[in-house]
Length: 129
Image (cartoon, rainbow, N blue to C red):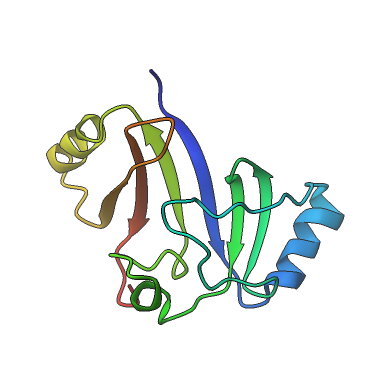
């Protein structure tokens, strides 16, 4: 089983304007977001989330919501700072080399999904979350 990029999450102050750029200038087709059954509907609306891709894979454009992690009982806040998520068959395959390379400015979270044992979210550590 190989790795693949599940999604790239891009923080945007104005989600509609940013989505318009990707739709009208770049030519991407906006998709329909499907909330994963295991977490239910969380607090997003058209002005806080735009989505390009299929099966929740692709480009996610989100407005930063500082209370998002707390409001939805998440360990991390995926709306702040941007991130990318990689699907891997075993999270240790990635975590071990990161540790060996002393990549201490990256955080990893294991997020289980239906198809793969791990969906690895990587993002740079900053003061916002």
